[in-house]
Image (cartoon, rainbow, N blue to C red):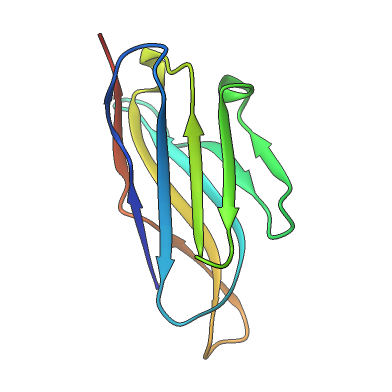
Length: 120
């Protein structure tokens, strides 16, 4: 299983970006999907997560600005980021709990990350 993230880039403060992450491989089912981020000198932190039923959870710092969504038909998770701030600058990683076709349990997978830089 591979998670391929895309959509990062350079954006001005108060701008918007949409990140996408597609899971590929021998996938039977995907449970929780999430976005994390890591900025230089800081620990990795959870940004947003969405359960298999569509329940969402957000870090306080991004509530009201970011929206996580998923498309199970395409095995993708997206993160719409609005009103971006310089402190949102980080490398963003997608994460998913995936059950493959040949195993009866779920395994945690990480994407390679995509850089988001918010600067004027």
